[in-house]
Length: 240
Image (cartoon, rainbow, N blue to C red; front, side):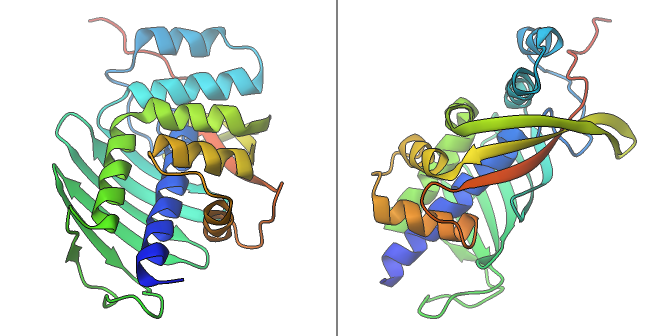
C-alpha cells in the first residue's frame, strides 16, 4: 500500500473510531454539564424504556451540546478531546491498538496533526506537528472529518444503523456523577460502511477491511465490536 492510501485509511479509521466514541459517550461521560442540551432530546431520554432507546436518546443529548468534552474508551481506543462547533475548533487525541496515538487540531480551515508512532514509509517524524495541505488527499480527508464532527447526526445515524444490541450492566460513579453503564455491540461492517458514506468517501470492500483492522485488530468479515458507555440522567437544565 502506498503512502497516500495508507494515510487516507488511517485518518478514516481514526475518524470512524472518534465518531463512535463521541456519539456513544452518552451525555458526555467526562462529567461535563448538560447546559444547552436540547430539551426535546432530554425529554426523549426520560421517556425511553429499553436500554437501546435510552442509549440512542442519550446520544442525541450529547449531540445537542456545544462545546463537547470527551474522555472515553471504546473497543480498545482511548479518546480525549474537545469540540466547539460554534467556534470551529476541534482537538482530539486518539490511541488505537496497533495504530499508535494521533493528535489532531482543527482551527477553522487549518488542520495540524501529530503521530506518536509513525508507520514505516510515512514522510513524517514521530512527535512533530505537521500542517496538512488543504488541497492534498490527506487534507481533504481531514476536512471531511471536521465536517462530520460539525454534523454529529451523521455519525449518530451510522451508529444507530449498526447497533446490534445494548445491555444495561449497572451503575457507576464517574468524576463524582452517578451514571448508568451500558454495553453496546456494533456490526463493524455496517458501521464502517455507513461511516465512509457519512465522511463522503467511496465505500470499497478492501478499504472497509483495512479500517476494521485498525479499529479492531483481528476483526474479520461479519464481526462485531463492543463499546462501554455511561449515561447520566441527561436532563435539560432547569429554568431560573
